[in-house]
Length: 246
Image (cartoon, rainbow, N blue to C red; front, side):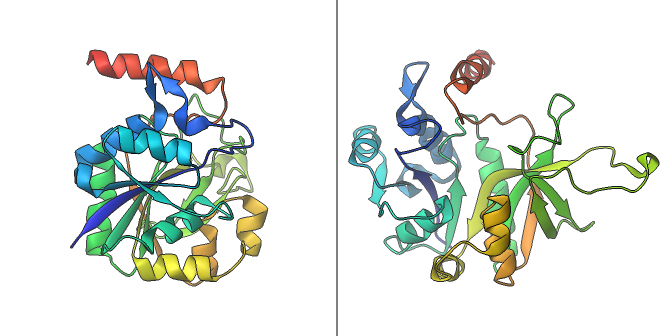
């Protein structure tokens, strides 16, 4: 089976324009992500899907492959689907371009699960740390069956509870590493719009639920940090320094 990593990257982020190219310890963030992805699947199997030539040029100058997509993509997964139409593979692993601390072992864990469950979408999750607020709308909470099949994701702190004594001890959150087949991505983009739940929650994997797909959740290591806004840069750089000292 041929597996590739696709990293969606757009320049026009509303909260942080040019985010993929922001330097972290002197290196563009998108290159950090590409390098870690290459440790999982090899340089020749890593592609950055972008609608911006500035990003494509940086990626290609660093020795990685860029795939141009349109600027009309509704979500990162729609961008992935456009890129997958140009790349021949059996499995497409989506790694977010704003997580420069992604663990290559987690990429391979999602890949292995997809190989073993080819008819299910595969997505990562981890447990919310005590330092994180389950009420934060920036953290998609994950509801699964006891055998890790996705039931729902929400910006709300779920599962809910009637009495305090029934409150969950801890919550699960989404980790944005996904495993897809091309047919699944074709169905996703073929829907033509955001689904109702996807639109309300702003969580794109909910479109697959509404399309009737089973979604298998895989536990990954906790502690990954994303760059969402400029204020996140110093935090992530400090974490990268600590990792480089190990």
